[in-house]
Every structure is written in structure tokens, then in C-alpha cells.
Image (cartoon, rainbow over all chains, first blue to last red; front, side):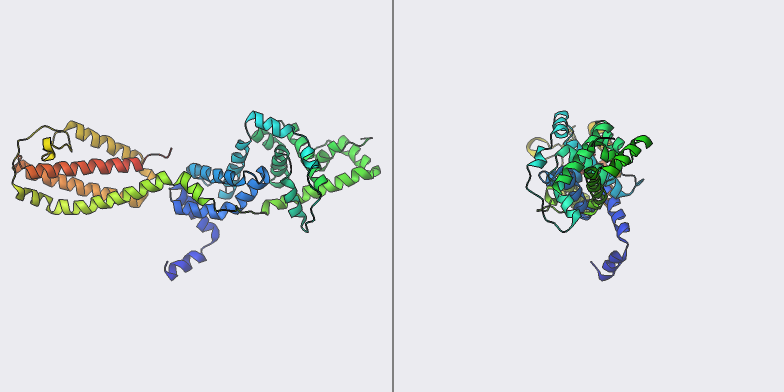
Length: 184
Length: 216
């Protein structure tokens, strides 16, 4: 790349370059899509890890970006791309748990999982402590905790996303907090 | 709330209780140290949680190869092939349209016109008589052209430009061959040349049409 071009590129606002990448990727530009992937990977991977746990995190993250590629043509720019991406990612994660049988199991499992975990970890950062403790929550409680307390979704939205009642969402949230309290 | 009921504490902390419920819990908390402790812990968790949204993580291995293999192969390969084919067609046609007719005319071979489909070679593969009025050929070209036009917005402008340039070159070569054949209809080389150019046009339209198809 010529120095002038490089300077131009590096001087352009990050958001403008990202917008260009979104438009180019939507038009089928694989390189632009890869740039989007690399720019958003850490945040998406973090979201998946918190919501789904570490086990299938990489696979689900991959699924998210495949879905992004498939759906990019529907992105109209009404909201920020990061917002659109976040919603899409949450949907992909939830779909993963959506089969009725799986969901039922995840949401009714008891707190034994948490009780049998090793003792409290000594971590200097409360945020990191909480993040680590999340991994040990039952799937259903973890999803609802992340959606409500971390991502700011309302119980009504969660109920719609997970096809459960608001009451179940509230009960699972409280359960998640109580389990985390024991852990912390 | 006269007895300890921690199940209601989250609703209390989230502001989801009505005034009476909130007052009952607040009153209970004033006299119950155990519940106050639980409420304090839950408050801390609730207040810390939003900060987790900023925590990022990375996979141990790069996920891009896996993503690319699921999203790019069909599209990337087709684009690459179409470009190569388009460029190859353009280069070949630059020669064909500039000197193909002249070379064909020099050949001077004669053949009896045969009604064959476009691009067919005759028995032994030595001769293909171009049939200007071949309805099947024209219909195929029309269908492929329509398919290409329908999916045109899926192609990037550069690809469209290359395709159109090459299609124009092919059409020019066909027109020149037809003009030459009108004066010498039995010329074997000219007929072979025209059949070859028409075959190339079909192939290019077909490739371009595939490229313009929506992803599955």
C-alpha cells in the first residue's frame, strides 16, 4: 500500500472504516467481512462465553459469523451495526438451546451443580470473579442472568426470546444471583 | 414480610414490587441482619454485572478458516473462476475478433452446410457449421442473459464491466464471422470459428449467470 493511501486509511475514523467494511461485506467482499470478523470477534466471543459457557463457545462464535454473512444483506443501517450484530448473536446462542427438551432440562435443573463446585477463588477483580463464576451456572440461569443483568434485556424480552414466561425469567434470574452469591 | 423470604429480594432490588410489597420488604430488612446481608450481596452482583459486557475474550485458535470454509468457498471460488474465465475469454477474443476471420478466410476449406446445434462439431469433430437461425441457441442465450440480468446486483461493478466488455467482443466476433460467411457460406474454417465463438458466448453467460445466483 502506498504511504499516502496508508496515511489516509489510518487517519480515517474507525467507525467510518467499519461502515465501509459493512457495506463492502454486504456486497460480497470477503476481505471486508474478515475485517469485520476480526474487529468484532473479542466482544462476540466474550458474549458467547458468558451466555453459553466455554464448552461450545468457539463453535457458536463461528455459527454467529456464518449467520452474519448470510444475513448481512438484510442490515439496513437503521441501528448501529454492533447493535444488529449483538441481537443476531443472542438469537444464534438462544437457538442453540431452543429445542424444547433441552430448554426444559436447562431451566429446571437444580442448584446442585453450583454446590459441588470448588471453593471460592481468590481474584482481585470482582468483575473477573463474577465472570469466572458465571461459567459454573446452569445454562438456563446463566442465559437469563447475562441477558438481564449484563446485557440489559427486560424480562418481557427475555421471555419472548426464550419462549418462557416473565415469571420464569424472574425466578431464574433470582436463582442465578443466589447461586453466584454462594460462589462469590 | 414477617418471615425471611429471600426469593422476593431480587424483585425488590429490581423495583418490580408494588408500593405495599416494597414497604413490607423494607420493613423486614430493617430488623433482619441475615436478609440485609443477602440483599447487599445481590445488590453487589447486580451492580457489577453490567461491567461484564466490556470483557472480551478470544478463542485459542483462529476461527476464520472455519468461517471462511463455510461462507467463502462457493462465492470466492466462483468469483475467482469467473474472473479468470472472463479475462481468458477477453484475451482469446482479442485475437479471435482481430484476426480470426482473416485466418478463417485464408483457410479456404469448403463444407456442405449442415443444420446443427450451436457449438456442435460434425462427425469426426472436424467441422461445425454455424446455423445463424438456430432457435435453440438464441433461446439459450436469451435465457442465460435474463438470468444474468436478474442477478446483476449481486455482482460487483468491476466484474460486470469485464463481463460486458467480453460479451461485446464476442458479439463483434460473431458479427464479423457472419458477415464473412454471408459471402462464403461453405467455408469450413469460418464455420468452425463462428461455432467456437458462439460456444464461448454461451460458456461466459453460463458462468456469469452462476456467479449472479443467490447464495444457498
